[in-house]
Structure formats: C-alpha cells, structure tokens
Image (cartoon, rainbow, N blue to C red; front, side, top):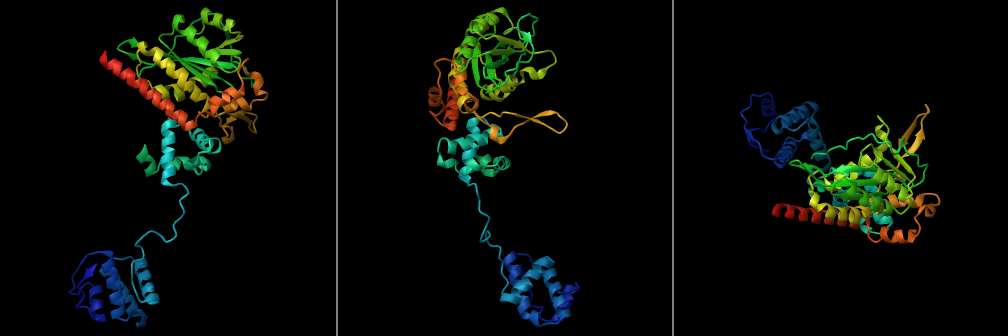
Length: 417
C-alpha cells in the first residue's frame, strides 16, 4: 500500500481521518507498502509511548488505511515493539517443513505400476510393491513397500500421479441331463475349476471371438484361451489344452447351464481326463459361478476390452491369452483370498485381510502338502524358474507390449481389408 500521508502529522488529523472527514487520499499497492506504512506510523507517533486512548486511535487509523485485519495489525505492532521493525515474515516456505515420506519419484513409479497392472485394487497393488522390494530386491520400491492402503489412494489423487498417467451376448441355457446341479465342494483342495465363456462383441451382426476362462476355486490359478466359435469343433480341443495346462491334477469342473459346456462332447472329454466331479449351477443361485464371472470382468475385460475382434484372429489372440497373459496371471498378479469369520450372531462372513493377498502360485505353495497336489513330472523347482524369471512389473510390461502389438496387427489387417 502506497499512502499519501504528508498531511496527517498530528493525532487530531488522525482522528479526523478515522471519523471520515479528513481530506486524505491514498492508492492501493502491495503488502510491502502496507507494512512500510505501519512501521512509519508507529515510529512517527511514538505509538509505544502513547496512552491507551491514543493507541486505540492509531490502531483504528492503521486498520482503516491499510485494510488489515485486527489480528494482523496486532501482530505487526507486537513485532515493532520487540524488534523495532515491521516486515513480512511469509516470504518463503517454513524453515522446517514436514518431511515428505514419499517423493515425486515414488509417486511416478506408483503411476507406472498402476498403468502396467491395469489399475489393480489397493491390496493387490501393495502386494506387488512389497514383492518388488522383498522378493525381487528392487531398491526403487523400498519406501513404496511400506505404503498403507489408505495412503495409496491419497497418492493416486496427487497432481504428480495424475500428470503421469460392446455388446456382450449371454450364453443360452440348455436342459441337458449332464452334470450334477450343485455347488462344488473342493474342501481346500486345488483342482476344482470354474469355467465360463466371454464373447468379444458383435459388429454388424458378425460375431467375434470367444474366450474360455478357467479358474481354480482354491488357488485362483487361471488359464484363458480363445476360440473362433463355441461349437464343439472349436471349443473342445482348446478346452482340453487349458485343463492339461494346470500344474495340479484337475478333479472338478463347474459350469453354468450354457450348452457349450453342458454337452456330451465335453462330458466325454472330462471322462478321458479323469475329471470325475462335473457340476453345473443351480437355478436362482447366482453365486454358484461367481468366482469365474468376477474374473471375466477383472481380468479378461480389463486386458482385452469389449471391442469386436474378428474370428480370423482367433489363433493370434489364443497365442496371447495362453502364452503371455495366463503365465502373468498365475505367477505375478496378486489375488484377494477370503477368510471366513463367524460373528456374534453365528453368521459366517468373508474378510479380506492384507496378509492373505497372494499370487495364485504363492497360494498353491502355501497349501499343506503342496507338492502332493502337483501333476506327475511337475516340480516346484520348475515352477520357481517361471515365477522368478522376471519381476512382477517386467511381466506386466511384457503383457502390455504383447497386447499392444496384437491389437496393432489386428487394426492394420482390419484397415487393409
């Protein structure tokens, strides 16, 4: 504030100005000028030596002339009494700011992790962050390995984080007396699979490819394959390969009531593979096949989307889903496993604890007598080589790169046609 105060030299003139009938004009400027005016006024009138009435008059004069608040004026007057000066002490950041635990580099690294993992849930993301430091020894993840679930979402809202970063046809039910209509009961044993089909959209009435999604109920071990159509001629050979790709013996097979699985060809296949427990979902029991249906959205749709993929590219997509995506899901993608807890009223509820987040491979290894469930000829030494050949993020980036290349080839071929 730059003030023209040459005509105000006495307390009477100050009183006239405060009461609004003094011939004084002034113009607004900056904070430094206002502070200078306060210092000059206090010094000129000898504020600290004045009596109570004069001090009140001078304080009102300062408030009216500068527009400062009463608290601001009081702080400036106290500062002048103690130091003889009036200066702005807010010229920079605090001399001892709070220490920032997670740096901008950490936040950018978290953004890269979310991009590579397809924005996984908080517990699953934190599991990868811990594994990158504790299992794979990456020093860049030392601080992020201790990130809490709540603060993870705070970092995702930060400016640094933000700077870095169709039609589905349901299967038709069919009344075929094949399979038992009940919920499977694995009793903690691996090898009880849930299966469902995901259709990759229509375009101008032409159907796209179909994905076969198989998930083990106990370990959440998952294999995804792709076929040109869901007729037995296309589906059965790929389904057989997917079942045999599981590292443990498959004992159960559960499907909904879709005719692509509930038929004699699939029943014969399961008999040849010695899969004895063939079950199908019950009417009005939507949870019977909820595990694989959840994986349809959180995995298949997340990585392959809803857009139409022509049947002509079924082989290329199948090579990606079986050869690239499925190994990543089993060795590097953390899953949430529930713990059943009984409350005071005797009701059983699911609790998802942080310590129970694990990859399907970690879950398999944690089972009692885990080696006893493996297929003949399969060892944990062999599986360890696959699990630790690359880090979780390297595997995720490889999946992203392979998917982008796949869609690029499909796009170019589709445009040329």
